[in-house]
Length: 288
Image 1 (tube, helix red, strand yellow):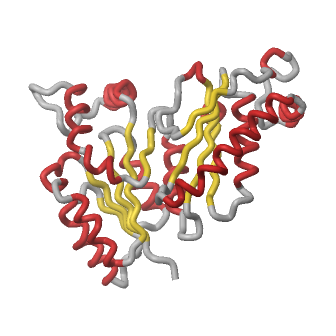
Image 2 (image 1 turned 45 degrees about the horizontal axis):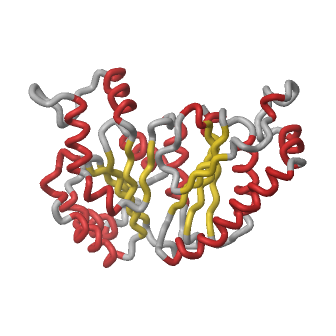
Protein backbone atom coordinates (compact mmCIF):
# COMPACT_ATOMS: atom_id res chain seq x y z
CA UNK A 1 0.00 0.00 0.00
CA UNK A 2 1.36 3.40 -1.00
CA UNK A 3 2.11 5.81 1.84
CA UNK A 4 -0.16 8.89 2.06
CA UNK A 5 1.26 12.07 0.57
CA UNK A 6 1.79 15.24 2.61
CA UNK A 7 2.62 18.26 0.43
CA UNK A 8 3.86 21.56 1.85
CA UNK A 9 3.55 24.50 -0.55
CA UNK A 10 5.43 27.71 0.18
CA UNK A 11 7.01 30.59 -1.68
CA UNK A 12 6.71 34.25 -2.45
CA UNK A 13 3.32 35.94 -2.65
CA UNK A 14 2.19 36.10 -6.28
CA UNK A 15 4.24 33.06 -7.34
CA UNK A 16 1.20 30.78 -7.68
CA UNK A 17 0.79 29.06 -4.30
CA UNK A 18 -3.02 29.31 -4.46
CA UNK A 19 -3.06 27.76 -7.92
CA UNK A 20 -0.80 24.94 -6.72
CA UNK A 21 -3.02 24.24 -3.73
CA UNK A 22 -6.16 24.31 -5.87
CA UNK A 23 -4.55 21.85 -8.29
CA UNK A 24 -3.88 19.43 -5.45
CA UNK A 25 -7.40 19.90 -4.12
CA UNK A 26 -8.75 18.98 -7.56
CA UNK A 27 -6.66 15.79 -7.32
CA UNK A 28 -8.39 14.82 -4.07
CA UNK A 29 -5.93 16.20 -1.53
CA UNK A 30 -7.25 17.54 1.79
CA UNK A 31 -5.95 21.12 1.61
CA UNK A 32 -5.47 23.89 4.17
CA UNK A 33 -4.26 27.37 3.25
CA UNK A 34 -1.80 29.32 5.43
CA UNK A 35 -1.27 26.80 8.23
CA UNK A 36 1.27 27.78 10.94
CA UNK A 37 4.30 25.49 10.66
CA UNK A 38 3.99 24.63 14.37
CA UNK A 39 0.70 22.81 13.62
CA UNK A 40 2.08 20.55 10.87
CA UNK A 41 2.60 17.54 13.15
CA UNK A 42 -0.82 17.89 14.78
CA UNK A 43 -2.52 18.09 11.38
CA UNK A 44 -0.72 14.96 10.15
CA UNK A 45 -1.92 13.02 13.19
CA UNK A 46 -5.50 14.22 12.81
CA UNK A 47 -5.68 13.45 9.08
CA UNK A 48 -4.31 9.94 9.49
CA UNK A 49 -6.70 9.17 12.33
CA UNK A 50 -9.80 10.45 10.51
CA UNK A 51 -11.30 7.84 8.19
CA UNK A 52 -13.67 10.40 6.67
CA UNK A 53 -10.83 12.60 5.35
CA UNK A 54 -8.70 11.86 2.30
CA UNK A 55 -5.27 10.85 3.57
CA UNK A 56 -3.36 12.75 0.91
CA UNK A 57 -2.93 16.20 2.43
CA UNK A 58 -1.50 19.55 1.30
CA UNK A 59 -0.91 22.79 3.17
CA UNK A 60 0.48 26.18 2.28
CA UNK A 61 2.83 28.12 4.52
CA UNK A 62 3.63 31.77 3.90
CA UNK A 63 5.51 34.65 5.50
CA UNK A 64 2.53 35.90 7.49
CA UNK A 65 3.27 33.20 10.08
CA UNK A 66 6.99 33.95 10.28
CA UNK A 67 7.07 33.36 14.06
CA UNK A 68 6.23 29.67 13.49
CA UNK A 69 9.09 29.17 11.01
CA UNK A 70 11.84 29.14 13.65
CA UNK A 71 11.64 25.38 14.32
CA UNK A 72 10.79 24.48 10.76
CA UNK A 73 13.21 21.60 10.26
CA UNK A 74 12.22 19.84 13.50
CA UNK A 75 8.53 20.17 12.58
CA UNK A 76 9.17 18.60 9.19
CA UNK A 77 11.39 15.86 10.68
CA UNK A 78 8.55 14.88 13.01
CA UNK A 79 6.47 13.86 9.96
CA UNK A 80 8.76 10.84 9.46
CA UNK A 81 7.05 9.16 12.41
CA UNK A 82 3.79 9.09 10.44
CA UNK A 83 5.24 7.18 7.49
CA UNK A 84 4.04 9.86 5.07
CA UNK A 85 5.60 10.77 1.74
CA UNK A 86 6.48 14.39 2.43
CA UNK A 87 7.26 16.90 -0.33
CA UNK A 88 8.14 20.55 0.21
CA UNK A 89 7.64 22.69 -2.92
CA UNK A 90 8.88 26.28 -2.97
CA UNK A 91 7.44 28.57 -5.63
CA UNK A 92 9.09 31.80 -6.71
CA UNK A 93 9.28 34.26 -9.58
CA UNK A 94 11.60 37.11 -10.45
CA UNK A 95 10.92 40.54 -8.99
CA UNK A 96 9.79 42.02 -12.31
CA UNK A 97 7.17 39.30 -12.72
CA UNK A 98 5.89 39.61 -9.14
CA UNK A 99 5.61 43.39 -9.45
CA UNK A 100 3.70 43.01 -12.73
CA UNK A 101 1.31 40.44 -11.26
CA UNK A 102 0.49 42.67 -8.31
CA UNK A 103 -0.04 45.69 -10.53
CA UNK A 104 -2.41 43.70 -12.77
CA UNK A 105 -4.48 42.24 -9.93
CA UNK A 106 -4.28 45.37 -7.75
CA UNK A 107 -3.86 43.15 -4.71
CA UNK A 108 -2.01 44.28 -1.61
CA UNK A 109 1.13 42.37 -0.69
CA UNK A 110 0.69 40.85 2.81
CA UNK A 111 3.90 42.49 4.05
CA UNK A 112 3.48 45.91 2.47
CA UNK A 113 2.12 48.89 4.39
CA UNK A 114 2.27 52.68 4.47
CA UNK A 115 6.03 52.61 5.08
CA UNK A 116 6.97 49.49 3.10
CA UNK A 117 6.94 49.54 -0.69
CA UNK A 118 5.99 46.52 -2.77
CA UNK A 119 9.61 45.91 -3.81
CA UNK A 120 10.73 46.11 -0.18
CA UNK A 121 7.95 43.74 0.89
CA UNK A 122 9.05 41.16 -1.70
CA UNK A 123 12.67 41.35 -0.48
CA UNK A 124 11.55 41.05 3.15
CA UNK A 125 9.39 38.06 2.33
CA UNK A 126 12.25 36.22 0.60
CA UNK A 127 14.39 36.72 3.69
CA UNK A 128 11.68 35.38 6.02
CA UNK A 129 11.15 32.33 3.81
CA UNK A 130 14.85 31.61 3.45
CA UNK A 131 14.81 28.60 5.78
CA UNK A 132 11.90 26.85 4.09
CA UNK A 133 13.51 27.49 0.69
CA UNK A 134 16.62 25.64 1.93
CA UNK A 135 14.72 22.49 2.91
CA UNK A 136 12.49 22.40 -0.19
CA UNK A 137 12.62 19.22 -2.24
CA UNK A 138 12.00 21.28 -5.34
CA UNK A 139 12.04 24.96 -6.21
CA UNK A 140 9.74 25.99 -9.06
CA UNK A 141 10.29 29.23 -10.94
CA UNK A 142 6.90 30.40 -12.24
CA UNK A 143 8.16 33.58 -13.94
CA UNK A 144 7.29 32.29 -17.41
CA UNK A 145 4.63 29.73 -16.44
CA UNK A 146 0.95 30.08 -17.19
CA UNK A 147 -1.58 28.88 -14.58
CA UNK A 148 -2.26 25.87 -16.81
CA UNK A 149 1.44 24.97 -16.95
CA UNK A 150 1.79 25.33 -13.18
CA UNK A 151 -1.18 23.01 -12.62
CA UNK A 152 0.50 20.48 -14.92
CA UNK A 153 3.75 20.72 -12.95
CA UNK A 154 1.92 20.18 -9.66
CA UNK A 155 0.01 17.26 -11.15
CA UNK A 156 3.31 15.70 -12.21
CA UNK A 157 4.66 16.15 -8.69
CA UNK A 158 1.60 14.52 -7.15
CA UNK A 159 1.92 11.48 -9.40
CA UNK A 160 5.45 10.73 -8.29
CA UNK A 161 5.76 7.52 -6.32
CA UNK A 162 8.41 5.44 -4.67
CA UNK A 163 9.34 3.58 -7.86
CA UNK A 164 11.16 6.63 -9.23
CA UNK A 165 14.25 7.73 -7.36
CA UNK A 166 14.56 10.93 -9.39
CA UNK A 167 12.62 13.03 -11.88
CA UNK A 168 14.53 14.41 -14.86
CA UNK A 169 12.94 17.38 -16.63
CA UNK A 170 14.34 18.44 -19.99
CA UNK A 171 13.35 21.98 -20.98
CA UNK A 172 13.93 23.59 -24.36
CA UNK A 173 14.11 27.38 -24.48
CA UNK A 174 15.25 30.32 -26.58
CA UNK A 175 18.13 32.46 -25.33
CA UNK A 176 16.52 35.52 -26.92
CA UNK A 177 13.70 35.21 -24.36
CA UNK A 178 15.95 34.75 -21.32
CA UNK A 179 17.59 31.88 -19.48
CA UNK A 180 15.47 29.56 -17.30
CA UNK A 181 16.20 30.29 -13.64
CA UNK A 182 15.43 26.77 -12.42
CA UNK A 183 17.85 24.81 -14.64
CA UNK A 184 20.47 22.70 -12.85
CA UNK A 185 22.42 22.30 -16.09
CA UNK A 186 22.19 24.48 -19.18
CA UNK A 187 23.47 23.53 -22.64
CA UNK A 188 23.89 26.03 -25.47
CA UNK A 189 23.16 24.41 -28.86
CA UNK A 190 23.18 27.58 -30.97
CA UNK A 191 26.33 26.33 -32.73
CA UNK A 192 24.34 23.63 -34.55
CA UNK A 193 22.94 24.03 -38.10
CA UNK A 194 19.80 26.15 -37.91
CA UNK A 195 16.59 25.07 -39.73
CA UNK A 196 15.42 28.68 -39.41
CA UNK A 197 17.42 29.56 -42.54
CA UNK A 198 15.59 26.99 -44.67
CA UNK A 199 12.27 28.50 -45.84
CA UNK A 200 10.43 25.18 -45.85
CA UNK A 201 11.52 24.44 -42.26
CA UNK A 202 11.29 27.91 -40.69
CA UNK A 203 7.56 27.76 -39.74
CA UNK A 204 7.94 24.26 -38.24
CA UNK A 205 9.36 23.12 -34.91
CA UNK A 206 11.70 20.42 -33.67
CA UNK A 207 8.65 18.21 -33.14
CA UNK A 208 7.92 18.03 -36.88
CA UNK A 209 9.24 15.12 -38.93
CA UNK A 210 10.89 17.33 -41.57
CA UNK A 211 12.95 19.20 -38.97
CA UNK A 212 13.83 15.99 -37.14
CA UNK A 213 15.04 14.45 -40.40
CA UNK A 214 17.11 17.54 -41.27
CA UNK A 215 18.78 17.75 -37.84
CA UNK A 216 19.19 13.98 -37.61
CA UNK A 217 21.35 14.08 -40.71
CA UNK A 218 23.73 16.64 -39.17
CA UNK A 219 26.82 15.00 -37.58
CA UNK A 220 27.18 17.93 -35.17
CA UNK A 221 23.64 17.36 -33.83
CA UNK A 222 24.36 13.68 -33.27
CA UNK A 223 27.60 14.48 -31.46
CA UNK A 224 25.90 17.11 -29.26
CA UNK A 225 23.12 14.69 -28.33
CA UNK A 226 25.52 11.87 -27.50
CA UNK A 227 27.79 14.04 -25.35
CA UNK A 228 24.90 15.56 -23.34
CA UNK A 229 23.38 12.08 -22.97
CA UNK A 230 26.67 10.59 -21.75
CA UNK A 231 27.26 13.45 -19.31
CA UNK A 232 23.83 13.05 -17.72
CA UNK A 233 24.04 9.25 -17.65
CA UNK A 234 27.38 9.40 -15.85
CA UNK A 235 26.20 11.82 -13.14
CA UNK A 236 22.62 10.61 -12.57
CA UNK A 237 23.66 7.80 -10.16
CA UNK A 238 25.60 10.37 -8.11
CA UNK A 239 22.54 12.63 -7.81
CA UNK A 240 20.34 9.67 -6.87
CA UNK A 241 22.88 8.63 -4.21
CA UNK A 242 22.75 12.19 -2.86
CA UNK A 243 18.94 11.87 -2.48
CA UNK A 244 18.17 14.44 -5.17
CA UNK A 245 14.54 14.30 -6.25
CA UNK A 246 14.58 16.58 -9.27
CA UNK A 247 17.07 17.57 -11.97
CA UNK A 248 16.24 20.11 -14.70
CA UNK A 249 18.23 20.33 -17.94
CA UNK A 250 17.96 23.49 -20.01
CA UNK A 251 18.64 23.03 -23.74
CA UNK A 252 18.80 26.42 -25.43
CA UNK A 253 18.98 27.65 -29.00
CA UNK A 254 18.25 31.11 -30.38
CA UNK A 255 14.45 31.07 -30.54
CA UNK A 256 13.57 27.81 -28.81
CA UNK A 257 11.73 26.43 -31.85
CA UNK A 258 13.95 23.94 -33.68
CA UNK A 259 17.34 22.72 -32.37
CA UNK A 260 16.62 22.87 -28.64
CA UNK A 261 13.20 21.25 -29.12
CA UNK A 262 14.69 18.46 -31.24
CA UNK A 263 17.48 17.63 -28.77
CA UNK A 264 15.19 17.89 -25.73
CA UNK A 265 12.80 15.43 -27.35
CA UNK A 266 15.65 13.01 -28.14
CA UNK A 267 16.88 13.16 -24.55
CA UNK A 268 13.36 12.55 -23.25
CA UNK A 269 12.97 9.54 -25.54
CA UNK A 270 16.33 8.13 -24.45
CA UNK A 271 15.88 8.53 -20.69
CA UNK A 272 12.32 7.20 -20.84
CA UNK A 273 13.98 3.78 -21.17
CA UNK A 274 15.49 4.11 -17.68
CA UNK A 275 12.97 2.59 -15.25
CA UNK A 276 14.69 4.16 -12.24
CA UNK A 277 13.87 7.74 -13.21
CA UNK A 278 10.83 9.65 -14.38
CA UNK A 279 11.36 11.87 -17.41
CA UNK A 280 9.40 15.01 -18.30
CA UNK A 281 9.85 17.43 -21.19
CA UNK A 282 8.76 21.04 -21.51
CA UNK A 283 9.16 23.20 -24.60
CA UNK A 284 8.96 26.67 -23.08
CA UNK A 285 8.63 28.83 -26.16
CA UNK A 286 6.27 26.48 -28.03
CA UNK A 287 3.98 26.07 -25.01
CA UNK A 288 3.80 29.84 -24.55
